[in-house]
Length: 288
Image 1 (tube, rainbow, N blue to C red):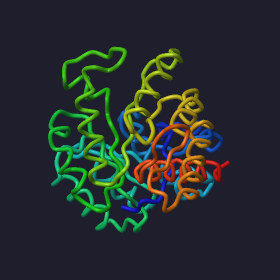
Image 2 (cartoon, helix red, strand yellow; image 1 turned 180 degrees about the vertical axis):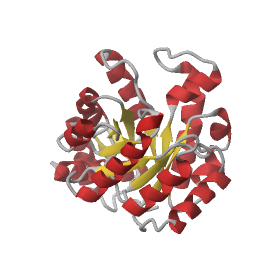
Image 3 (cartoon, rainbow, N blue to C red; image 1 turned 135 degrees about the horizontal axis):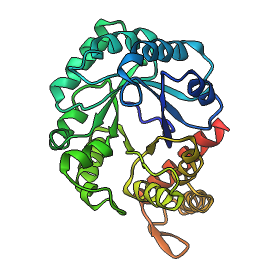
């Protein structure tokens, strides 16, 4: 996949059966939307949700927001029709829940291509079972069309027979293994949702935990979570200023051997990090 930074700080699930929600999404400052055909949609509403999600993608009314469609899982009665319709609609990505193996990734990619998905439509694989976590490196490297891993933390907690607790100790192994796999494969990875939309302090702490761990962003279930997520997963003013100082010191000290900035020794790795910080800041700033 390309190394060009794509902002995915805030990625909001929207029920595609709800026309008002789809309309509201046009005004939200999210980086990406997951137009949902799965958990948020009742069985009787799934055909309508599919039609409305595809129409939203075709509308051209969502600005710079990355648009994806979450289809129903492999083996469900709706999966094949969902995947074919999403492929024809041509969103930025097709999100598939409960992807457990590399073979499933390859099957999904083959189905997308057979249904005529344009080249810009990538696959986003949800990691939400113990089997998926144990296979995550093979999943992450199974196809160049796979662009993003999405952590399905609610299902993981259920499958592990664990509890939702502050700090997410039961999930840390799964989160870390998936993050390692994504970075080894050179693809993006999104942290899971935070369920208590009224717990602003807990949500902010979990965003910071995900950011500190190295996730690219977080999936969300409520518009009220967007602002904190965008701020947390973007470089701070202090980080941007420090990055500029590092690059200035590096350029000024070219050929001098050991370089220092604010009393700290600067090496190539620090310069690489500083450039990534500034590149990220510039892309986010350009979006307005």
